[in-house]
Image (cartoon, rainbow, N blue to C red; front, side, top):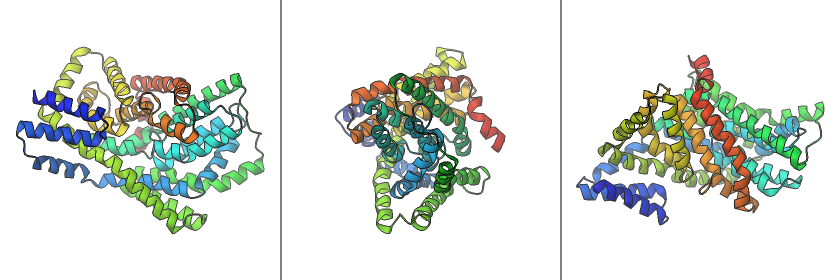
Length: 426
């Protein structure tokens, strides 16, 4: 009965508009008061959830994106990506996708991608005659690539709550899925652009390609340096995140001389605000998970799931459907923090590497960013672009169908994810 009250309290607080992190904490306090458990224990859970050196990577990746957006790096990356693919049918649509792939190697955040270089691509596409809803859908969907290709904030979150997962394996394992997402998007953009008569750019000359390469080569080295140092064991993920910040600041302040102290301070303030929103999920998730563990919910969930089928693929697809549904209703960080520890015993029983499953789960959660009713990336881009939200969601349908087919493919053939980590890390 107490657990039912706990669940009802959480749902009611969530529905009345309380931020989900605080709703988890408040409902956990209700449970503690009714069950006679000392509240001091929850304060220990809150503290321990944030007492991790790995968590430093989250604000550092956020700061990297802020610094990049505050300098001319975004413009340089746009020029570098536009020349090689702008002449393909769909023109700037392919540039939009490619810039998301490149920027993904610096920010690890879908929101940073959408609000930064994604909006730059959107404005360029509108000026060239693309429809606003399709344009916004391309920008929202391409931003979902950011947390798949390393570095990735959701990867850090997943590794925090699933101790058996390897950050290095997940970062390297996201490379091929991220590229497959980009290839699918570019294929669809080319097809729909031919049907609708969207414009494309002129073929680049060798001189323009060389000029764009010179302007953009230094920013592109960011993910190369990060992955090389992490995979070789020179630095940890947190130390690597600090290196990316220093490198981005060096480019903006010293090389390009476009990043002043005021802009840097504003970037730091933005990170403090955004980081607080993210980290409160850890605190709430720790309290919520404690209640679930006390009620033996993870064990009951695993037993029930394993009784549904003896086929591992069927069980994994059911889990994917579950995360797709909750992804439509809640933030990816919340879903990872809250539900990942519950499904890992089932995933392990199915014989899948928790690190490989982490990549699939994160991709699954990213789909929720472009699906109603939450679809935060759609609302961000629609707000910036002043485009009709319903029409943007409609244009997103082919993208999230393609992404979910990719989730299914990776579930059946996880070797696509593990081939690069196994080759490099062994």
